[in-house]
Amino acid sequence: MIETEKLRKVAQETAGQRCIDPACGARFGLNDRLYVCPSCGGLLDVALKAATDTDPEALRAVWTSRLASFDPRERSGVWRYRELLPFAADAPVVTLAEGNTPLYAAPVAAAYCGLEALTLKHQGCNPTGSFKDTGMTTAVTQALILGARTVVCASTGNTAASLAAYAARAHLQCAILVPRGQISHAKLAQSLDYGAAVLELDGNFDDAMRLIRELADDESIYLVNSINPFRIEGQKTVAAELLQQRDWRVPDHVVVPGGNLGNSSALGKGFRELKDLGLIDRLPRLSVVQAEGAAPFASLFESASDVLIPIEHPQTLATAIKIGAPVSWKKALRAVLESDGNVLSVSEQEIADAKAIIGRDGVGCEPASATTVAGIKRLVASGVIGSETDVVAVLTGHILKDTDYAINYHQEELYSPDRASDKTKKERRLAGTYSNPPARVQATRAAILEGLRRHEQQRDKG
Ligand code: F0G
Image: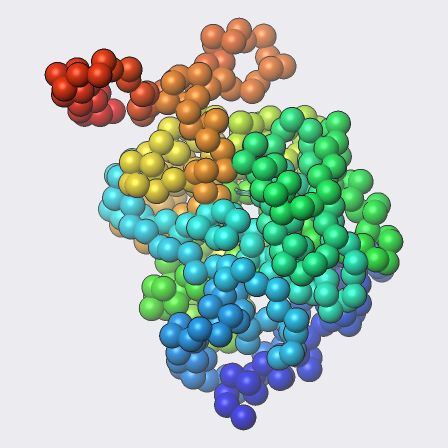
């Protein structure tokens, strides 16, 4: 048996689910159908007990050799790292060749932030256009193992689109609960095309999340929001892929957007397990950035509190992270504190400008993803991140997920959603600091050349 097979066998023999609350710590079987601890209501982790005799070099070599394979499990940037996953060799893997997302050097965004260099890990290049696919491949595989007939989630759009696609691959019924009128058209279009039952709710994401948890009592229904620890297992593999792409050089700092806080929890778990296995010798600092109007986790961090106070009416144009009661905050807090990271929030204007700047590097993302670059700029300005720091920003969704936002920004028609305040619409208008509006030209050669000249002048000003 080769080294990695031995490791996987040991990992599975000892794997289980464990309550993350240190005062409880209750343990459960891997295939117990649970979402929270039945003893205390705490969040659950999949606990893998690694073999003590792991040879990190052998593991790295196997993962590298798989890059040249056409086996569907090895084309997947999640299942390629299956030694880190709690599944048996004969698991009914549901895959769309997820992961495999690029790392881009971003010199324009780096200069904007005050950094010498900045790297973008573009998780929006997943099959359905967001990082959710890396967790959905494992969660839907687990749904098949448990014999579920229906998979469900509450969503701000991306989880829904991803689940709808993976459920279609697995021939499972899929129901998604989304806040009516509050998710982007592109995300809605995806879920409809993939054949999901789209249930639009009069309420916000937090209302949808509460309802969905009530549904999960039904044995035939499997809940795949990131409260489900099998989602986190798939999502954590981005840590391994990122490090492999960097030839195992650990970045100083990794920055992610924060909504329901599954992604930050997953990255934290991924880095910690790689360290426990001896594949890296230190953890990167992990920081989370939220939108100002939906920042309960940033408030908690700022006040050094250990209780999250939900926000009843979260507001942000970055609809993906318009969440007032993030479910996984305890896991995310653990990951941030353990790595000496930060949590902060940024304004609508900062998000909009950062998104346009990311675009100038030829990389497109949706608004929620741009919180990272906006947050990094702030952390550099306040001296938390030095200009020579090796920073990776994780972009979570593709630009085509929300084209209305981009078009409105460039035409200076983007309005801060702060409706409760007494500001007029004009006062809520966001500045198009780096806007690039389309120009109407006459159908003549001279007019086109003049249009180009004007565009160049305008760009130089930006
Ligand atoms: N970025 C994008 C593009 C997202 O869609 C989400 C979450 C996040 C960031 C935040 O990640 O929740 O793990 O902290 N979207 C969820 C959804 C809530 O339903 O699609 P998180």
